[in-house]
Amino acid sequence: MISIKSKPVLALLFLILALGLIFVWQKTGRTIDVGTGQVTKPLEQIKQGEANPLNGLFCKNFQRRPLAVVLAEDPVTRPLAGLSQADLVFEMPVITGSITRLIAVYVCSLPDEIGSLRSARHDFIPLTMGLDAILVHWGGSHFALDQLDNGVMDNIDAMANPYNTFYQKRGIPQPHNGFTTGEKLINGVQKSGYRMIGQFEGYPYQDSVASQKDAKTLRIDYSYPYNVKYVYDPETNSYSRYRANSPEMDRNSNQQIRAKNIVVMRAFSRQIEGPDYNDLDIEGTGKCQVYQNGEVINCTWQKSKSDFSSKLYFLDDNDQEIPFVPGQVWIQIVEPSQNITWR
Image 1 (cartoon, rainbow, N blue to C red):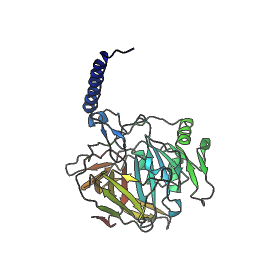
Image 2 (spheres, helix red, strand yellow):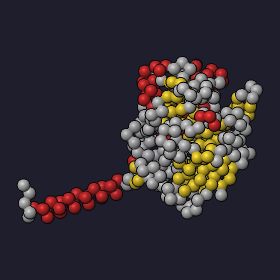
Image 3 (cartoon, one colour):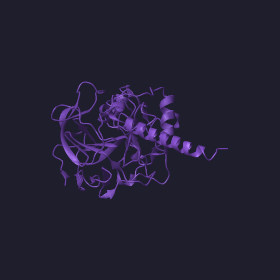
Image 4 (tube, rainbow, N blue to C red):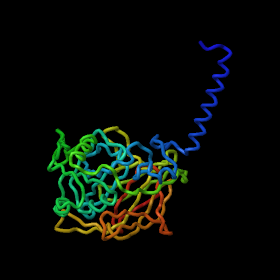
């Protein structure tokens, strides 16, 4: 039994312990991201590889190889499942001036359900190889399949459905009814004999500090109903995403998608082989803008023309990489003449 006299001593010990924990917390430099509630790591620990290389957030699975899942953009598929848990998302036209498609890339979190999945295009290959990702898709154009079938990169194709990795849902019209889960993907990757540890060097990250006090809206005028806007919220220092003026929701969580970084990457698009396929100039260099902390930074993107596995860089006026804010990154690939507004 603890005596009355010993209680002040215990109280003092608890006080010392609490102060010590606070000191350690401050010393390690961990901060809470207001928009997601996730713990971020300081920059020196990110450089040591203790954070997700795609979004800078601390997680236990930071070394897992990225899974790049091709998702539909068609209105019948909305809302998509698992989109809010993606670490990085590409959006780009698959028909010049018309339909767009997404590639949602996952490292730390794997959703209970992901979909609707769609087919791959040849432009997806250098983008995802640059992240050392495994491409997950439901068939593809012959331009893409010719390369994938020849082993250009590790991929899992739902048309072959290895190890029952994919399934079709009732009540959703084909070809929009293809889905998978994080657990099924990991099982498919392991049984396919693919390397599980990622080798992507990652992007640099900075502290999350809202510098813009006013709400502003970024509009990306893809053709309707693929047009996109992001509404900046200075209180959470995040950008709420809308498609066709409706909130972009996650079917799994019923939560609106909120990004921390948006890159508008300009690249020429041209139709090839009739009206069904296009070709994007995503190797080389071009203009871009990074939207973060409520501000816009003009930049230049670079990717090697001779090496598909080369990193996609976003450089400032001094040819230095622009550090992202820890959190979800969206890379919006648009044509050079496409209308973009920020006001």
